[in-house]
Length: 277
Image 1: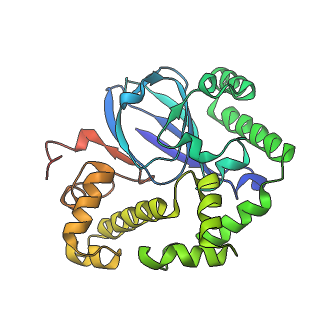
Image 2: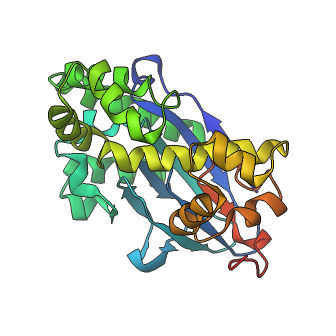
């Protein structure tokens, strides 16, 4: 398998984390997608794939999620896509991101004519490099067409600087203060841009913080739970099973590179029979 990340054009970097390219081997695989709080737009250029219970599709915009699901792909998959910053997709789509919560939608579902044109261009592009140039042109055009949301995006971006420095019990208030908003105003604006409540996002952040600590192999599960802000190891275990379907012991015992370079990808070919561990 080949998985590579590419940097978008400079004007897009505050809003788009990366473009990605995935080329699968000849053997069909199943992978589990675990939410990291970011929206993604994916184009399977040579086949349609099954996204769990969401159905089979070649192009999809993945809304903000707290669920997980397995994706079945055929051999030789070629996929290109976009991962937005947690608060970035709102700059390109004229709807509250909370309307997309726990959804996977095609361009037809969204009734977005420009996105349908983008799909056709990407599917017929002569190379992956051309796909990324098409992405740059599309998103820069949309960004220039409507700048009204930039001020509020900057408020949310300021709040995100506090993430990782506070425990869940105090972080929402600190984030609201960083955004110069009341907690009620902040919750409403956060849902508009990120698609979920701040508390839900911080839950995902804590989960991925624990995963990063576990990948180092230097901490016990008890230490990981404490340093990541869980009440205890049992609390962390419940959260891991709810957000990924696996207990922390699965990640601790398995290949620590299995989730790289995006922590939302866990290759089920490596899962064995440890789902209930």
